[in-house]
Amino acid sequence: MEPVFVAPNWLSHPLVLYPTILIALATILVRVQSWRFGTTSKAQRRIVQADPIGIDSKASSRPSAKRLPGQWIPVDFKAPDPPPYPDWDVKSTKPLPYRPFKYGPNYFVTMGLRKGNFDEWIELDNEFLKFHAIKKERIEVRGDKCCKTAPEAMDAAIELLELLRDYLPKRYPSMFVATPVGMNNIVTGEQFNIVQRPLAEEPMRTIGRLLQDDIAIMMEGSDGQYYLKSGSILLPGFWKLEEKFNMNLSDIHTSGNVPQFREKLEKGMTNFFKRVMPDDIVLRNNYFMQVDDNLAWSDSIGPEDSDHTGWFTAQKNKVIENHWFRSERQSLRRLPRSGGVVFTIRTYFHPVTEIVKEPYIPGRLASALRSWGDDVANYKGRERYQAVLLEYLDREYQKQLDSGMITEDSQSPLKYPY
Image 1: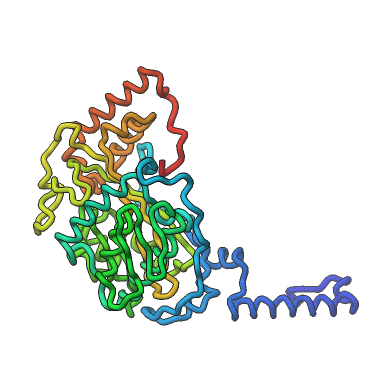
Image 2: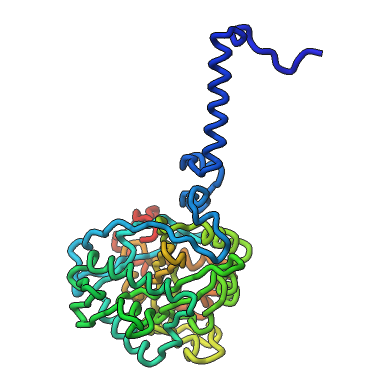
């Protein structure tokens, strides 16, 4: 029987054969060592650990990847110092025009994550004082219902305070000034001491006063799942911190009847939380319709303290002036010392009658609303407002066509999420 492989004649020459063997052995040794000690290149890791979210899967080369669930190993990472926000002013800097909806006819349920920039972690604008006043009142009136931290997440909450103390005075120097013990808000006159122990107030209350964002911190348990253990949820619109506190990630979403969570979101979200590292920051946007003008809590779905809230309580087909566009810009990052995963949830809230003045918006929003499947439509309450809203959007779309602002065969040149 002939051998399976016969070496070519030139390979049998000693001057060729010996170097070839040495090169092959060296290649094998390098590969073994790189896998053993985690020194594979990014390109190699992408091949081995395909990343559908677009974040380099770097965990294989980091000590924290070799830990037990719930036992975080601190990582030595500090984000670059952010430059000052260009020409930022508390009176004149307008909210960013997020319009995170797409033309139909197809609507896809996805995590919708994209890479972010640490410089742009926190977004403030000329609605800061309005948000601040609402948050301040809700902290005083509702207290622990909106702001609380479990003992096992206290270090993470304090770590977040420290990161904000480092970030805010550099990014927004006309509002925040660093001090030896924390920072001052020179617009509101507030002083924040973050080094005294015990702290003057629950850390999530302080964070609520610093930002327009709501905040949630997820901590990993010994079972490898992530639990909501700290939050400053003052402007939620449709959900309550007291109901979700201590829940794991999956239960938070399934208890809220998030469409297609089990089928399309749970696995990817779980994997993301396991591998996100402190030098990653990701963003996502979402949107809802609301049929009242209450930023903090949409009282059209029922009183905030009621046990029975939902779209089923909302008055049907209110006049168009009661229709508001609510969107969120969320960021996610891991805290390097504690290992907590921080959500920032920044709400943007505009009357529909205002945003329809923008080119393409009436037609694009109408198309998006019509593209929702029944599960998404039920989740977002479309049955309660679609008759009035869609008729209005169609009419405004026609006005833009008639005026020459847009043409029928054109679409918005702006890229998602604008």
